[in-house]
Image: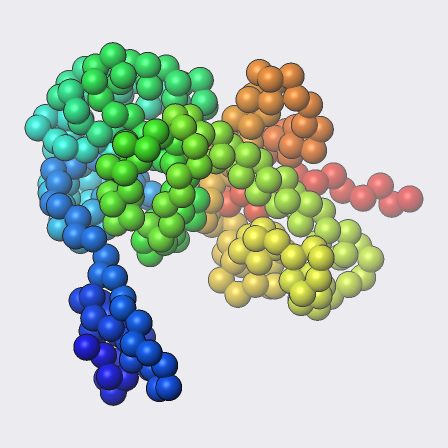
Amino acid sequence: MCTGAHPTCRSGPCPAAAHGGTVAARGRARVPVRAPPEVPVARIGFVGLGTMGGPMAGHLVAAGHEVLGADTSPEARDAARAAGVTVVEDATACAEGVDVLVTMLTTGQVVRAVLLEGPALLERVAPGTLVVDCSSIDVATTAELGEVAARRGVDLVDAPVSGGVVGARAGTLTFMVGATDGPFARAEPVLAAMGRRVVHVGGPGAGQATKICNQMLFGSTLVAVAEAFTLASHLGLDPRRFHDVVTQATGDCWAVRNFCPWPGVVEGSAADEGYAARFAARLMSKDVHLATAAAADVGQELPLAERAAALYAALAEHDGDLDASAVIRELPAPTGR
């Protein structure tokens, strides 16, 4: 039972509460605190150990799971091995005797190749296995994968993420999960080991649809932020003071706080480091294109997103490994009128 005397009760999580005790506050009744549910140790296959998947797999190891990981990159394999992942040479080993299979790959084509072609992991996992795709891919591919998984008696969950490399390393990702209730309940504790928020956004495919719309919004607002700072500069404004005003005004947004494209404004930003990628332009280009393609499928025009998609595509063509905030370089020069 917590009496409030322990130092961490005033500066951090209560030790007693962490074990299902009660919290006693001065002048208040004791409030029962429910301990988090214990998560059974699982054998997890993880395909895709890159800058996102590697840290995610490491968090699963830290949570006590046995993790088998595969990746084509020697550097990614070495980093995952250092985090305690049992690295296998062939992705097919990630499907053998596992309770859960997680994929974190770059495109829908790659996910399809791994799960349906080549190694065809959906054909190799046992019926009843939970397959969680954390990649950001198109809704149509997710639907196709779901149909194959259902025929095999496999639960497929789409769970793309938000939070980037920083969130993957810190274990603070947000998962947008598309699944029916049963598979979601199975996936939730696995995802919670890798992130801060696990949101059940709807049925199968809803996770990818949510991610597509979110990235369209992020990509479009980042272009708007780039335009605002460019215009502010041409009007003679100090960029730091402009940033101070915007972040306390109606123009405030995630992009201006975390991806400010103007150098010398936000300490540690990609812009201050030659646009070294926090979120690569090629990935932003892919994500915004997924949104415009989905819109075309349903007959919805997206004039702002389509313009943003064109700018990111131009950046990705020649500097795709730069940060997405480098899109500011793609803005037209002033005409001098």
